[in-house]
Amino acid sequence: MYLYIEIMSPIAEHQTSLIEYRNVLVSRNDRVVLDGITLGINVGEHVAILGPNGAGKSFLIRTITRECYPHAGIPDSYIRILGREDWNVFELRNLLGIVTDNLIALSSRNFTCGEIILSGFFSSIGVWPCHQVTPAMEQKRQEVMELLEISHLAERKMNEISTGEARRILISRALVHDPQALVLDEPTSSLDFHAAYKLRNILSKIAGAGTSLILVTHNTADILPEIERVILLKAGRIFKDGDKEEIITSESLSHLFGTPLEVVKRNGYYHIW
Image (cartoon, rainbow, N blue to C red):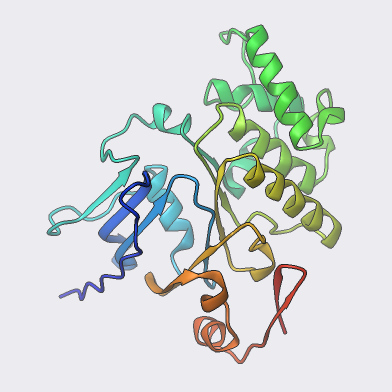
């Protein structure tokens, strides 16, 4: 028997719900990885989902991308995106821009950076002879490359650029449709200090331009000043959910990560010692 713990985040009636989870249970190889998840994220909201390795963060993303599905037959259980439970995956990709490490690995072929960004219009990796690239698509590619400060990489091959540059290329690919939200899985993993700093500044620009950010991470330094709400995920359950200032404390994070931690805030960012 599973115990469902319902932790509802308040959703103002006048706001549009971007993502709603209710009593969501997901298992993999007979192991429960998401256990009774209930939460709501609104359009326009900037949220960080923070948790240690194995907390279920990646599986949460996979339920959004329809790579895995929750258990059927659980009373009052659903996942809704923009109010709907059923979506064509290709249609959904135009509304939610999702960037994961798996996508970076798939994009390491011999395509130019410009081609990888354009491929976002076709839900492919790279541009192929069957694809019809329009002037409007080219214009949009230029706009997002300028926003992410990577215009100089348009003709470079993906296998010739750094990991930080590749991350920005794939974010550009996700932005060509002007999605309502950008979902990023461990956005600064494997980046050096300079590349991580640069990427966080770029993400702040994206947030300022009006795109919702949902950052899924184990690193408190990824929680941008623009993010107001933090969800703590532990062992497949929501441990805490609320205002950033109340959630990111030494006591909460020590409990979350299972080790004594001290949280220090500096210049709008949180660091752990």
